[in-house]
Length: 160
Image (cartoon, rainbow, N blue to C red; front, side):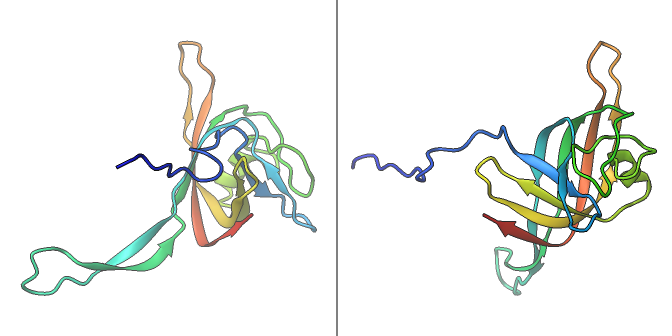
């Protein structure tokens, strides 16, 4: 038996550099502005299931049910005085007291349109709110960090 190449046409993968998480600016027309200083991003949609195991079965059985947007985790190098971008364009800052800034979205429990774009240009649109925004201050000289979690609500719409 010989080895068979099972890589996709793009190869074994693409670099993650260039993945962009952006939030809608609540303007007309709607513009998606990238969150500033983003680092590692984790996108977690999933499928719920329902147990359909019958009596006498030795194995559990189930069926897929609802699609669940899940959560997006993003590590951010935190800059607490950077401005928001409501109604305008630019990189979204982190200030708690500026319209359209990340921490203000958290404190106001804002449901917003979001977009994630992969380095190859594909991605997805979805609605979400900031579920968690813990700030880490490490006294050993490391940068201030936010380990933000977004809670997706409703459908995820992929694009190419």
